[in-house]
Length: 115
Length: 112
Image 1 (spheres, rainbow over the protein chains, first blue to last red):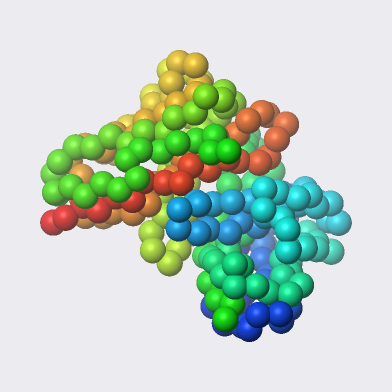
Image 2 (image 1 turned 45 degrees about the horizontal axis):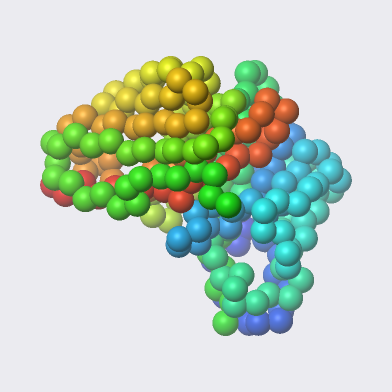
């Protein structure tokens, strides 16, 4: 158990509304990631963070922003949700203690539906 | 660009049968991981392979990394219904990169 929680676990929202998803970890891991998972596309990286206030874009970052003001929290914001952002969102961490080969440990996911 | 191709996409077998799933790429990876994901949950790391030709065993699961570190396979012996799930491979491109490239997965159903 990597001590990762995501909130909310499920959300239904309307097109054009802002949405923020939260990822919380309890073990001071430096690297955190946001993915979306869609049928036919697999897991795709949205944004990632390598420390407080240090973030970078992934493969599918358009329409998403992130913030990391504390080590333990990584927030994903959809400024104006669209139906194409209906997906399951996963947060992940890479442990920074011991030997690491970039393994990632995932949270339980947030299912977001944009109507 | 899909850097990691997994095959087959879907596999339905009877309990007790053996199976192999494949993860192929034209790119070299510094390490490769296999994950299993069950419905409604996040992927769970099964194994990491690092050295070309490396073989790792996890009970009835055998993982192999290709000699050139471009491909990998997962073999399950005597599949059980508990093996049902989505199997994902993911590759790391370099020691300094913490990003992973994921394949689209193989969805395995083991019928009792």
